[in-house]
Image (tube, rainbow, N blue to C red; front, side, top):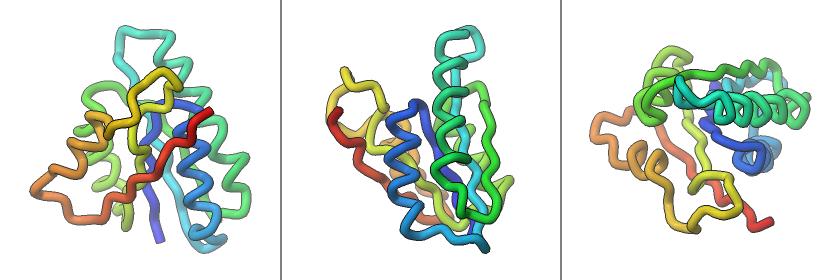
Length: 129
């Protein structure tokens, strides 16, 4: 099975890893993608920190790759899912910032509303800190 995980923070990556730890095996592959604005070095650093969590937490998974992209998060995650032939797309319910609202985030809403979606989108809750 090929999973694509979309993240924007350490907290989101941790929640996604909690979900995948019970599902992904040594025969599976996980690609973790974080999308940052091209002109925001702080956001890029946050994305890189978020990606560092996945290989450690998913050490028993066969293949874990990470990547930072720039642009629209919805478009970049759709493209990454197609490029990796992902069987399942896993995202957080909302941004991992503890100060954010508890409603579905715009990226998650955009992925769920995609009329052309051809793979399941799993939305994992982000626990309160």
